[in-house]
Image 1 (cartoon, rainbow, N blue to C red):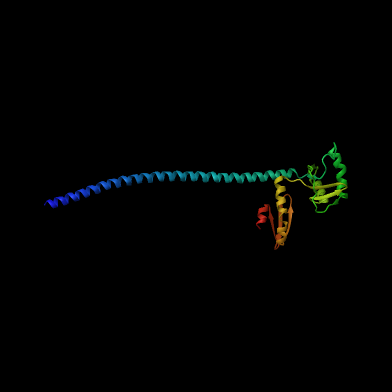
Image 2 (image 1 turned 90 degrees about the vertical axis):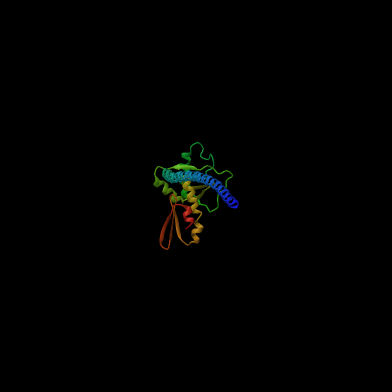
Length: 221
């Protein structure tokens, strides 16, 4: 009988130990539930922040596109405003004296018809002179003068070596320069090509005409 009682007491003690362990497990489970709730709250907060960032990025992308559009319009406006301009480079500083208009009026008619086109060598100055920008009254006059002189041609008349070119905005001038740097690449492709003003490169391949406004697009062609 005593053995039976002792066995029952042992079982009761084990059950009490199990109850104590269950209480501990229950407490740990509750703690884990609380931790999970905290994590879920943090994840929810992160999700909201991600949505906010994505919205901001989309807004920035829209603004970037708008800025690119405005920059393009500004460049176009600047180029249109320069349509009547001719850029003259090579006149030594101060050669015009005190009357630039009279000097150019007397010099240009002599320079263009009588000046001979120089070779491909580049003129080297210790200090390149500042260009002279001439604004004519009519765009047709500008085109005729540039066609007669030859676009970006170097002319010599006596001691003068003068380069005449159209006057483009900085962005357009850089695009034209980038397009012209791809001429060797285009020759290797065996295509016909040309550069329209202000900065549009056309190519013809397999009787198909394509226009490029971005040098990088042409580079990837």
